[in-house]
Amino acid sequence: MAVVSNANLLSKYLDLDQGEKVQVEYVWIDALGQLRSKTKTVESVPQKASDLPEWNFDGSSTGQAEGHDSDVLMQPVALYNDPFRGGNNKFAICELFNPDGTPHKTNHRHACAKIMSAHADQKPWFGIEQEYMLFDPETSKPYGWPKHGFPEPQGKYYCGVGAGKIFGRDIVEAHYRACLHAGVNISGVNAEVAPGQFEYQVGPCEGIVMGDDLWAARYLLERVSEDFGICVSIHPKPIKGDWNGAGCHTNVSTLAMREEGGLAEIEKAINKMAARHNEHIAVYGEDNDQRLTGRHETGHIDQFSYGVANRGASIRIPRHVGKEGKGYFEDRRPASNIDPYQVTGIIIESIFLPE
Image (cartoon, rainbow, N blue to C red; front, side, top):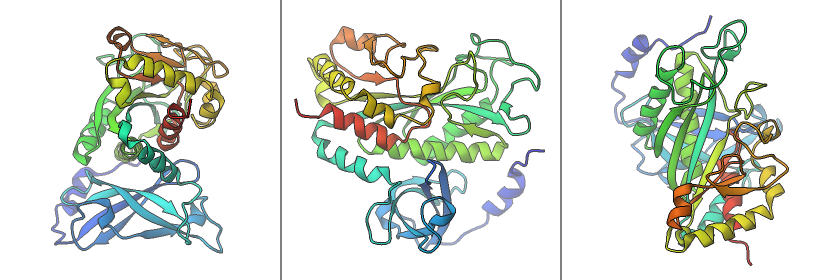
């Protein structure tokens, strides 16, 4: 039997006055790219992440340190309102450092922030479409799927409405509202092609904020789903067979791309990215080969292609961008389990390589 939160019982305690003290959840990314967190009490309401003190955790329990020297340091870098505790309570996305002050090897944000800072004058904007699938822990099958056999084939589920098509809308709505309360720049949600599969979009975000907001949205989805007793999968091929995989389509633009004549800048950037296809694929998600097969609205992992309005290409230029001659492009290669810091970092690095 799944164990879920008792909201009515919990609310009795969350309604208690907590004085001037504030609870802050420190959130970090472990060695497997999964989220961890623990809570610290601070004396006053932090206004920004840098108001919060450095903290640490036992890295030997998260695959991030050896037992004989296990402390990993956490530095809060992005601050959000906590929708679970409410009031003035917060949660913070943290960067990780070694005891000597150097970035931890699992801290991909640090390098990304340097790249974004170096090209801040070009105001890189991103929007990421995070696909995911809900799973029932009692059956180990996608939420809403029959215990035996399979549901009807893909077709009626994408952006569907009604019983028999949508499974888990309560979780989707709860997550959406939690993101808005937290201050995450979530821009929309929709049901995806397979039953029990959904997508939310985060952005537009400038520079390093893209990675921060996407990790914050992932944390919120895990916490919301925890309340409902349902598991979240961001594996790029959660169900084998004739079912769509899950991606993190990454929409990108720079100031030059958004101005008149921007299409030429977009095509120049795409050509630079094409020359580094393998380097990009290397950080575009584990098991992405299971998803990028050339079927189910993907390009093949071993081939680079681009085109206007082509969802089977590696990179798609939206039709309205081709018509207006400026705007953004969509990199369709990133898998649902990417680290957004690595992906946005290498995209900007490639775009601004010398001619």
